[in-house]
Image 1: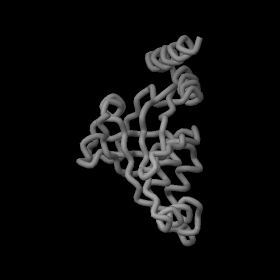
Image 2: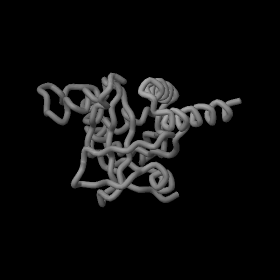
Image 3: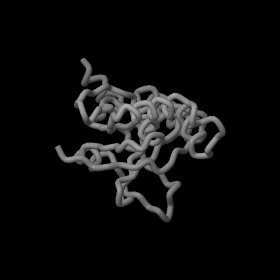
Length: 183
């Protein structure tokens, strides 16, 4: 298994009332970016840390990370697949090789607050990432298969409302593909 190391670049809110945001991770060379959807609470959690809000060091990810480091534990995050718009992620104890499934946005927050490495399988990075342009860091791209079913349905409804029928067709095809896969 070949892995690519990622680093957190930024978080941004998606405009339009969908109450979701995007976490942007890049490869170490900052040539490719991976966009991961998250909820508005996670956007707030990252914003608190990026703005160095008072008392942030007492929040659970920071406190737990300090405790684990005091015990000599070493961890890494491994993003290994995507299923129906949800990245499958493991928190791995690199000493014991014990693993725990974890929501990708929580894993990125935990890694970011505690300086744990984040890895993604190279093939998944190749399939899901887009070129990163440092000249236009606010330009984001998100593969359609990285949207949850709920987000796909909301985007489909919005596409129909604004009469973007080509986009509606793509979104509808992805929803049908997922439904057929589970039957």
